[in-house]
View 1 (cartoon, rainbow, N blue to C red):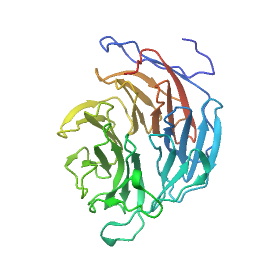
View 2 (view 1 turned 135 degrees about the vertical axis):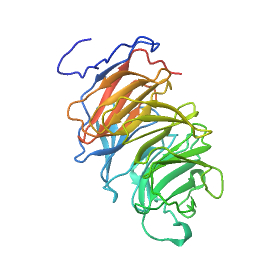
View 3 (view 1 turned 30 degrees about the vertical axis):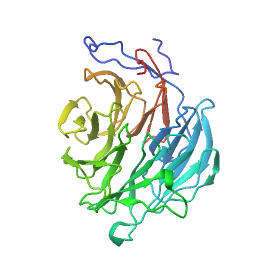
View 4 (view 1 turned 60 degrees about the vertical axis):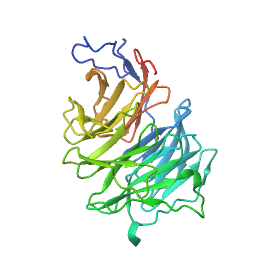
Length: 341
């Protein structure tokens, strides 16, 4: 591997004997520049040709071949939020203080009618948006809410039936904790939510009313990312403990703990092969893990990255993107022993 100023080369740590495969290479491209605030969320389009990012109240779409932005949307009224693509790639969604807004990717200048959540039990106070996710089958859209630092709730829409005149959602009862992250299972049947007090709740997507079927005490600290493993068997969480934890999605029992970070873990993502996972921390370090062996394969340390709020692999697994405190989107070309499923 060549060392020069145009590349960020992987630092290999320790012996990889017994991990079962050759460590992958991550060669960094020139970062995407344009945001003036820290980036809180990134998402690849399902076709892999573009990437969306959110920084404070601003959203941009980037053409990955041209390495530049194609569209920039007006500022939203919530500084910290997520941006997600619908599974068919048609819609780009992001939350505001009390709504979810959409952009038609076929006509990006056209902002769709926002979904206005009705507050449960008649409570009309605005709510912060802390997480947004489409179900993989495109049927549902879920949003985690934090009414304040002591209460929260889950809002679920049947996205296939949403129209400007009929957008009534299903709300969960008010919970004694604000929700900070949400994720759908690969089969679109279950939702996992993480909260500010370190609890993970499991919900049945088609159940009315929305009531958690299982709640586990993950850690008594703020849960930033929670997501399902690609095979749906586990829910993965990370927090201020510096550990990445695997939980059995059926029973809620602890299944594995990945240790190595020396700073709070803020982001996690799976490669499409399901065998590789990345985790980013508040110190600007990204760990690449071999999931079956629980061994760290590689560590990435982009210069002056700061807090890594978001990580994502492209749908074909050939690009890793990270973003956060330095206002940049870092892109790595991935090669080596990372076969797709």
